[in-house]
Image 1: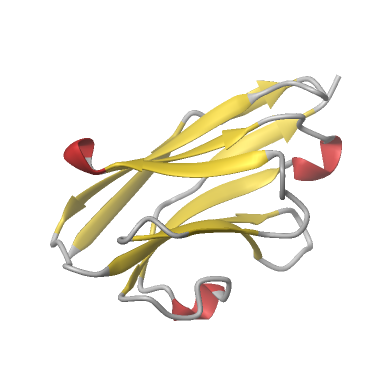
Image 2: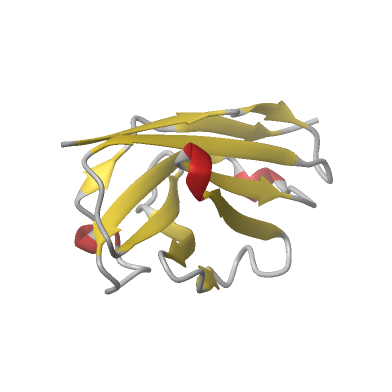
Length: 123
């Protein structure tokens, strides 16, 4: 089994920055993809960013150039650095793990999920 625990969410002003983290533990896989998704009230879960075990990264169109995904493999951590935040970035942010490399931008492909962390962008 895999456990994913997000942290680092909170309230930030528009234009500000925030970094959310995801700690992974339990079963390991030789190939995998780590993803960040978000979900605002009344909206579908949206792809934010993903990183493969080989280091390839992908970003959703709405966050390109503002958000960066990274990993610290020694610590089994995944990070999402969010800059130039906008009110429309307000959502619960979820960390997810998929085995291998697949449909990285489709939340249905991922097998394991964290409980989420709330990010609110407001003045």
